Picture 1 (cartoon, rainbow, N blue to C red):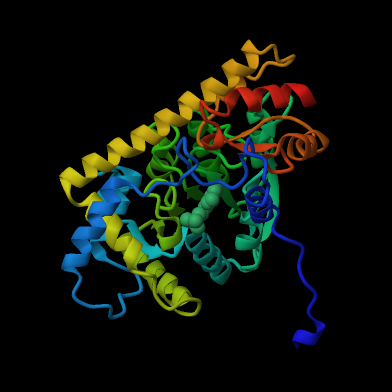
Picture 2: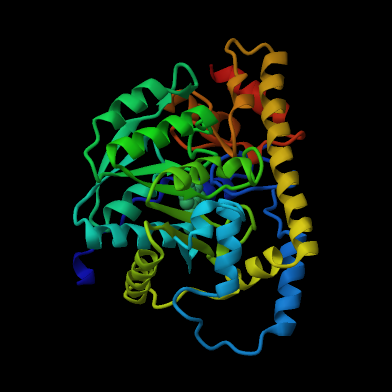
Length: 396
Ligand SMILES: Cc1ncc(COP(=O)(O)O)c(C=O)c1O
């Protein structure tokens, strides 16, 4: 079999990281891969998570398998974090969740569930969307269709075009929505727009599948969950893939959750049996460690407060860096207005330069970003912002 296998080209984002690492230029800047970094370029371990790990190590008595849904006290805590403790769907007993290996694991198991009950169903994704949505959803057998989302010229959401397309979606179609901090554009729906999308989904019978991978990094932990909370109040059904990679810094521990809201508690229980059987056929049961740390943080008031402070710190730093980059470009006389960077949320923005300009930034200035001109704002720092802004102006 292996005789016939040809090498795949390098992954565009992971390839960028290795090119950056082998670049000897001391001024090099990495705006590629989507991980949070501090001013020294390090992706730090949260102090709250480190403390949870210390406590868990003392407490852990066995490494025997955990059950397919994972820790019960992880699931109750994560459901409240996502929906808010007083959400009516929780009170009605219609919410269930399982631990999953990262947001990717949750997206894939969710896609398999959809395909089990609606084989070959159409799922609408934003144009553009996170590149990995396509294999995660498509390989499960779903048909992917795109709704217009980002208007590059206006640097914002083309909401009228999005709604026009969703009005034409068929009853029962799936609708993938980024909960907050849209990847790759940074352009989020505002509250009025979430309300309008909820109304369309309810009227047209669309089933939303929310990808919430950056809760707390946009506007605040509760603020960033406005969309899924609104959908879950108005609609009988919702699916949500959650990632703890960014907001707990647990990337390599692979922890996330798949959450469902079903019309009745009985249907919610039935759904979970299928989610467990799908996971059993892929990875059997979730890894325990990341979930143990998240539940330790969320269920201890003091650790939770410390963690919330750390998330607030990350978010504030991202906003500061957004302003710093936009203002430095203006100060240095950029011939274009980059103020939109300040208005966007999360780690990403489209700089709005051509592929050729992205190549020039890489070859002439050792500044690394994805060909689409998506930048990871967390790669900007007070130490590199002038160099970066001058380079951008030079290639415009
Ligand atoms: C939009 C989006 N969804 C989901 C994920 C899932 O991440 P993970 O599987 O590492 O938790 C990511 C990570 O980059 C993401 O950007």
